[in-house]
Length: 153
Image (cartoon, rainbow, N blue to C red; front, side, top):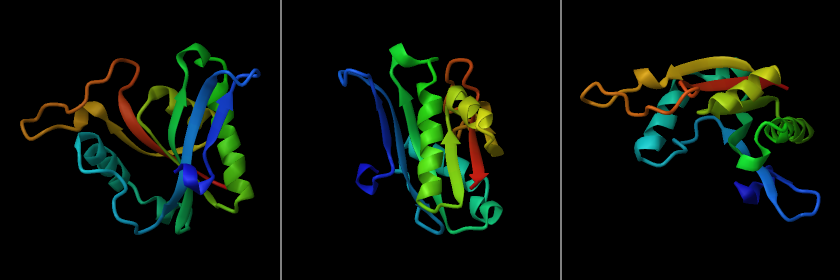
């Protein structure tokens, strides 16, 4: 993802600390599944298969916010919001017509919704079960679901 030149990093004023990162990439229609074949990858593929963002966005490529991470000491300070907003501007300036994010965290979902992104799919963790009918993931509150959000640019 770093090689594409779409990702962002927030650093402290003295350049001594990484405050957060936003790993972004170009997502292309009809590309084979993007995630590895493990427990997490299968879950992410399941979430992505729940909605056709290409039909909703009327495009064949999207600017994808893949990973948003903020250092523990910087959480709640607006770093995540700034990284996502700068990612949106990067998408616009690069000519993308669709911004896409798959959120597995309550906090990234909240940021995306506050930016005006539209939730187009939700998969509660309690509904994603193994062969025995047990939930595969039981994250701590307030993380209760994975969501897909988009914004037409």
